[in-house]
Length: 334
Image (cartoon, rainbow, N blue to C red; front, side, top):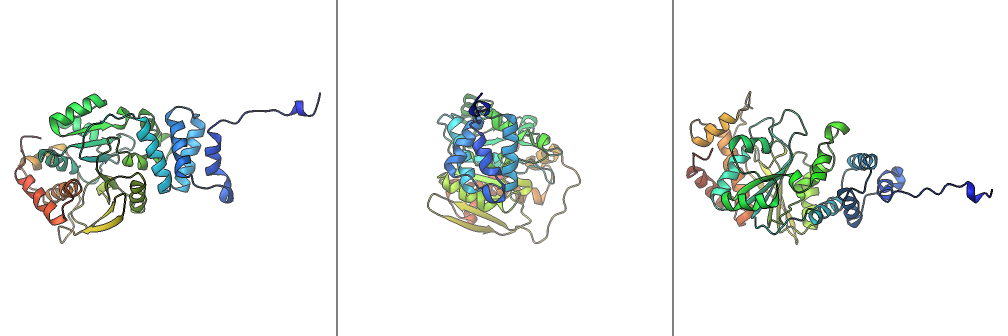
């Protein structure tokens, strides 16, 4: 028996190099290039990765924290593999956080935008964190349009100008990864990158994040992805919702530039957080059956942010139009 015959030749798994890039120690590890991120995510979405590798990959990324190039590469792979048809929308609206401190006042804001004739595609995931109000079950409870596939999506948009489609409708693999949150004990980078997908390539993209350091990261990733108009805000609870008690900074990006703008607070004093949240209160505010200064400020200014992105108007013009839409709303809609 020769020496060479004693050496085992076990082939390396094709995904192993991507785990090694992230996990080769303080001196040996590095971030992915945009192309490497694209290839790694493509393998994940095509089911070419073992669960053990996926868990290691996600947690190594979580510890390292993503770069804008990595986010752009991951998102481009998702966009290429979700095979979305050409459906016209004006605004991409992501909803992945859920609400726990305030009611989801962004939902009435969406109704106002749709009332004005703007087409909005909403996508998100639900149930990955306890004690939160998520958009999908709320839409079901309120009888608002939901889609399970692209054909449903097109029909609902034509009928209502807006629709919510869960992530599993166009990328079941990504929703499975998000649902691993309770197994891993941590949110994975998918919670962040899902907001950037814009599967229907809307010209305007809005994003709400919770942690301020992500603002610039998403802003830069949006530019790398070539989005025409992107704005990232620190949304209430991480959703795309303006907290009217605070000044709001919006981080904008286009293919040629990045900039910031500040929206002033609407009220001189902060409002007290409600003791409980009920859908009935949201409906009563919409119907004009009860007054809620905070809610009205959140709805109008969130709608104005959407108008600012869709129409490229200034803040004052957007606020004035949003206020008029609120006055003329169809109170029987909710």
